[in-house]
Length: 199
Image (tube, rainbow, N blue to C red):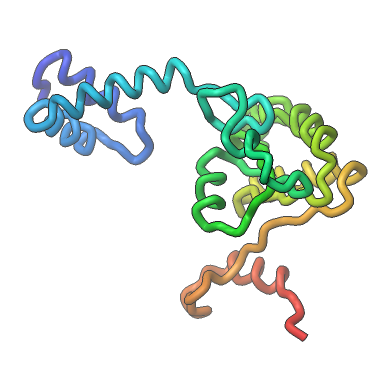
């Protein structure tokens, strides 16, 4: 049942967020309007500013409001390591985990001919420019362990093979603390194929 045209439009607008359906959107909208109009105003202002000002880093295609993101602008990062990821969220996950101090390149997706996403849409020409600029010793392919992610990693490795001495793929497999009987078959196959020597 409709409440009012404007509230209905707002509920519909919230549904553009991933994982937010009609009921979740309705709860958020009613909460903001009933209990937190100041928070709603702040959300509207910051969202409008972000949509207006945030673009792509000219070097790595990460999201930022400056010409270069903070990772590309940081002179302490290691130019010898270049990590290719599917989305800016992947950079946040890697940074949160810690231990990686190299550079990044964001594809903003993966190869998917059925959806009309080819090399041009992923900016692979810009990846080649980035490789030429940095001359990394190692290219790390950190695309998702999906069929499309694997195809994208394979395509990039073939494309870059003559330009970078070492091309690696992130390991996939059994999570720390996981029990084999509860791991799906695909993950186990990857874990067995990616095994390494311990002596």
